[in-house]
Each structure stands twice: as structure tokens, then as C-alpha cells.
Length: 115
Length: 118
Image (cartoon, rainbow over all chains, first blue to last red; front, side, top):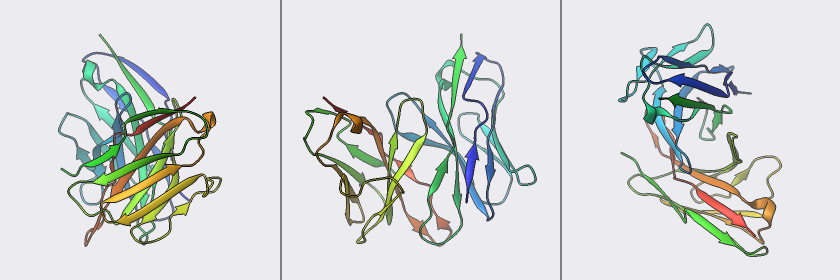
């Protein structure tokens, strides 16, 4: 069985400050890891993903996440946040097996950027 | 990039009405589509998984006869909430995923449908 834990349900941070949103997963098999962002009343948008290769992955808007296998973590970071980063962020894991793959989502972290 | 279109985005209807939600992959073949339900301030809960041409696989606790899923083509899946009641009010999100030699591709999500049953 797989599960995803997002330790922080709400993270308030001042504009231009750094932020880290934590994500830990449990899985007995190889995993693919994802971060999605959800703006109010919208669906999820893929922010970044780890499939293989370099453990540090980056998005086009300044976010990055590092896959740490020993700590089973995939924390999301940004060195300087903007007001527009205010949204709900979901960490997800997908397994490696067969065609019945599905995503397991964490409960989400609400990031609020304070002016 | 890949786009998934979900329609309608918002629907309000009377109790007892059946509501159909469409999910279309616009520029790729979606071998698998997923339907999620999201309650306020909570994560997405997978309702069912459907592979094109096959019957959907429902998660435990999801009523098959209440939530009818059809995935008749590689670009369209529909979710019909039959005889909807106020407790069915929620935000429903679909996603679609293709498959390449590199493995499963990330799911692409629709913008969701907010269903309100009066």
C-alpha cells in the first residue's frame, strides 16, 4: 500500500520569504512523485515531477523539489514566494506497476502568501 | 501541453435529477481516465478508474449504480450522477492519462465540475 503525508495543512509566509512544503511517502515499490497546485475552483495543475534521474527537479516558476529516497521525502521549496503563489498544493505518488496505476494524494497544504 | 476539458464547470439542479459530466482529452489519447471527488478543504478522493472500452473499477464505498462511468473512446469519459441528492453536492474532477514506452504519463486534470443539488 502507498500513502502520502503532508505534514502541514496550512503554511502562511510573507512575500519574498522562502518556503518549504513537506511531503513524505510510504511505498514498497519504485515510485513516481508529483506536486500539483490547485487555485480556487480549478482543477489541479502539474507543478513538477520526479520520474528518474536527477533527484532535484525544478518548475518553470521557481519551485523545486528533491527526491530523498532514504528519508522517503519529496519536499517542495521556493526561495522567494509571490502573492500569486497562494494556492493549495498537493503531493502525489504513483506506483510503477502495470496498467492499473493510480495516484495517491496527500491531504494538501494551503499556502498563503502575506503581503 | 496536454489539455483535458471538463464540462460543465458548474451545475445546479433539483434533487432527483441525473447529471452528466464530460471529460475530454483534447490532444492525446487517454488510455485511462480517473474520476475524483473533492470535499471542501480536503484532498482528492479517487472514485473510479476507467480504461477505454472496459468497465470502470470503483473504489471501495463508491456506489456503482449512483455514479455511472462510461469510457467509450480514447478521448471521452462521462460520469453520470443518477438521482442526485444534496449529499452528492461536491467538486468532481476528472483526469486523463496516456501511456508511452517510458511508462505512465502524468495525469492531466480537468478544471472540475462543481455540482450543487438543491
